[in-house]
Each structure stands twice: as C-alpha cells, then as structure tokens.
Length: 206
Image (cartoon, rainbow, N blue to C red; front, side):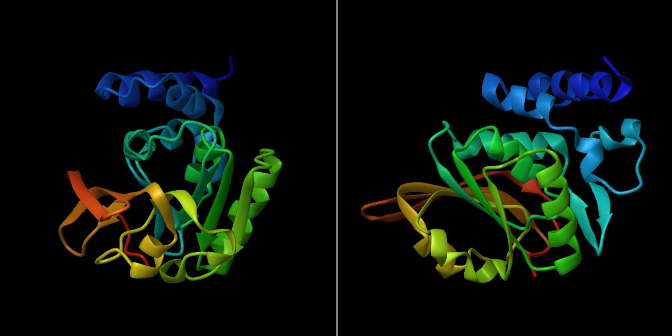
C-alpha cells in the first residue's frame, strides 16, 4: 500500500465512517477514488485533508465528508441515472460512478470541464458523461433523472432542474446565498417535499 492509499484509508475511517456514514458501497467508493489526482498541484497528504481545497478558477473540491453525506442522502442503489450540476474537479462524479448506473455531469467553465473529462477518462469512469453547459438549464437530453446532485449552490432550486426529476426522484445539494443549507427534495405524484440537513458552504452556482 503506497502513501496515497494509506491517506485514503485514513480519510475514510476518520472523516467519513467515524461521522456516521455506514453504507459499505459509499465507503468502498471513497477508498477506490484517488482524490489527489483530481486536485492540481497538491501533495497527497493535503489532498486527503478534512476540508475543501482550491482547484483553480475560483472553484473548490468539497470536503470528503460532505460529498459522502450527499451520497447517503441521494440513496443511490446502483440502477439510477444521476445528473450532477457542477463537475468541478470531477471527484464527485467519479465517486457517483461507483454508486449509480449512469452519471451525467455538467460544468459551465470550459477549463474545468476539459480537465475533469480527461481525468475521468484516465480513471476509466466509463459511465460518466461530461457535458459543458449551464447548470441552471440542466440537461434535458437525458432526463428524467432518479437523482440530481448539486455540487454548487444556487440561491434557490432552479425550476428546470426539478422538472427533470422522475416521480420518486430526489435532488440533493446546497441552497442559499450567505447562509446555505444542505437540502433533499423528493418528488412524488403530489409535488415536492423538502428537508434540511445542516449548514454548509459551497461556491455559488454560476
């Protein structure tokens, strides 16, 4: 086991499992994805720290525990089609590729889109489709989705995203400007039901 694998094992045990994430599939995904490869110009030790980190262009890679918590709230069982808004580094999409059947990830910034697409291909994340586009519009070509996963924070949930959820689907992500909350929105035949799951801090959705 090399140093990066040791750091990754420690991250999963100390930052994720120790905080109550018990789903074996989620823990396995975090052990399998080499986080340090998704962060430019960072040493492996820092890459597995308990914090968000800069990836350039004013964007960040989220704290590992928060990504794991969002995966838990998403309740992805393996058969789902997922839309991620805000590819960023590509790390969350790589994690989701271990949990879902198919992942569509949308990034507005061309430089981040190109870099993430390259790394995801190198990591053989064949179920991930990288799309350059506006997250507020979603991606109607592959809708409807079982899960929509927000990796950046809008001030309120875009109506177009909610419309791209299946009946029975759920949207998970940060909402708000200034104060932000991690929310889960579930769609049923009668409409949408929202629950809050703690304060968070993400970069704004552009």
